[in-house]
Image 1 (cartoon, one colour):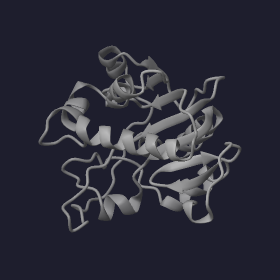
Image 2: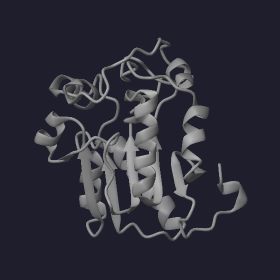
Image 3: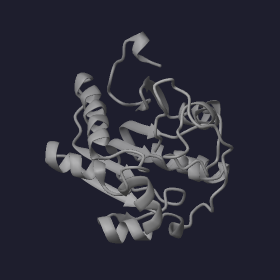
Length: 216
């Protein structure tokens, strides 16, 4: 996830580094403690993510698209799960993670999105802060797997090279990621999805009609 900089809109610039992809030990107790636990250094807390959950689901409500099932890929400390449990208890929610620590600590299924996709599809697939940790080949495979499981909408957050340079606060954002361009992501996402704004992508065959200017 990203942490926004001051209201000037400019972050602390830095060069993206590289982490070891696909290694669950990267996302250990220290990682979650820094970016999700400690208030001074965490990316977002429950209040911020609750607003995001409300916004995403409200858009789908506006488009009259029911959310009977939801899949959270890279569920972390379980903030989306907690929100769904409280506000959308009838939604069948499933959470997966590549981090063994997060699975043991927060009760997710251990899955690697670069190698796995379920046979079922989900009304809403959430993938927040996962793809930038993957190299190009892994990321392309992950996008294909996300698309295969998307039965309606994908909510995607993936910081780009431009975001790292101009938007993110590197005191609160892990910038040791692959800084790809937005165009790189769009090229692969648009094979399966229509962008409809604010990180939401509608599957091409989703039974939803959009006004022309709703399509980003």
